[in-house]
Length: 117
Length: 113
Image (tube, rainbow over all chains, first blue to last red):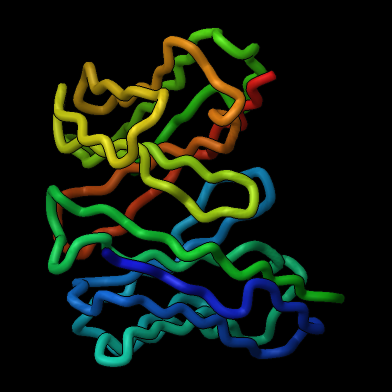
């Protein structure tokens, strides 16, 4: 059974700082891993999907990495801004080697990021 | 482009009353559809998923049920709500290709009183 852990649970940084959010997963037989952002009281916004064949995936100031062998992914946020304040969630496929119709996601509990002006 | 609609945004219901939450997806066909629940201090829990019309898989035993009467419509229901059904309910969809993203609706905040 896939288990996803995110550390730290909360992080507070000053504006402009570069930061790294960590995600670990127990079942490494995955095709991809997805990072989401959730603002208070809102749904999830997809940030990045990184494929198992990729080591990194970039979108603007965000860079996600994936190391299947160690069961870890990181989300790097460059030059953080107060608008980046949100909960960041990592999600990995629940079943080994699932990619198509039987695809389900297991989520970590998230990292609550606060960027102080 | 694809969009997902979920309503209502908030709902306050008495214990023992019925529930119906609806989710629809536009701009795609034959999506996988999901219902998740997010309780305070806990992660997202998958409740149901569907790979096609009338095909529902339940992930956890509970007081809820789901139906998919049309390709892009997913409904979460209960005949009698319990206090423990309170939470934030999220609908999601995903295409069938291997490396494709999942997308979520804006959620429904359900409070059972």
